[in-house]
Image (cartoon, rainbow, N blue to C red; front, side, top):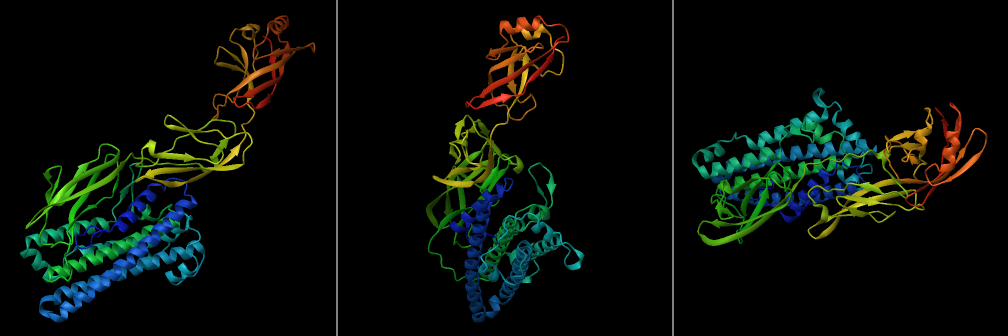
Length: 538
């Protein structure tokens, strides 16, 4: 319920939300220790926010109780609803808390009874475990259901509780007050979205269940952060509803001393290209019976909801002003959101290899960040940008391991997006071939004609073969031709010279000869001796 008028989202909550979206967008990458630490920090930040929200709710309940005791006839029905909301929220919050604790115990092999014990032990040790959270979610729990299905049922139950009207005083208020009915409808829409358990579409366009998207193949640190996010949503929704009920009863202890426009995205501040950005423009600390008028680019927007298609990627900004009844002041506001290209990154960890003395080419991207705002570092060598690629050429004498770290410039600051480890290896020795017409590679397994050997395009080459992943360039600097008689002819460069061709043409059909002691050098100057070529003359 972070978008409610009576409970505006704080800058800290906005920061936490943005962190959560960025970290979630990076889950397709190999999860590094830095990213896992980021999930832990995010979880702890939300826990601190929950404590603050819970404290405000407790103060609000005390104020509500005092108003009820002062005027029972006016507040009693609404006070009953507020207490019921508080109890239901505590019930769901405590269920999620135990769910988290069970996952931690399974991940770390511990027997903690409370979250305080986890904190005292130095928090979760195996945040990167992607198996245990799913294993726990699929474990059979109460009623013969899997834990993940029970969790979904609990979420559905809570959503239904906070969105379905079953109170006479609330039904009467909705029937008699159109403005109140409109406000309640907005809250129902927002809470329905906030606690939705609908299936979602993955990056391949396939529908996947809420359970799978929440628990399957996710690092423990990410699952715990997401569960904490749901707990935070519960506390915010609870605070918003109790405040709303108190205002509906006709008396609020909140003092309005400043009117500030706020922009509340209802589907996030990071939007994939092709999606729509949707935000609620509202005023903080204002009478809920007096909805302000909102203008963006000179046009009034209906119900204060800014809804536009997202056709281009990159940062998008907008601005406008708000008018409040009885006040001629134009309250200006600005907002922004990020539209990114749809993307997913998959890495084969066993192939995380860089080669020494070779131009290793990498594609590097950060969702929502343009290429000119990305920086790449590597201890083994200085990365060089070439077009839309990055080239890293480690020297011959370098360590056995290194890493690539990616930074993105966000709000003028260089933020690390994580590290990727790599092993460093020398280039393997290529094979030798006799090349004809720039495309035919002869390896000695088939008979060769003197015409092919004497061709102006014929030469000895060093190659990994047409199907090799790595195609490093080597130059043949010399070799020796061994004739059937035992005679040796030394050749400089990569072509048979006149003396060698003359001797080969003088051989009889089916005569065998060898090209041996083939010397090659790489682009970085590394010397290689290649295997011999044994030929049979046609």
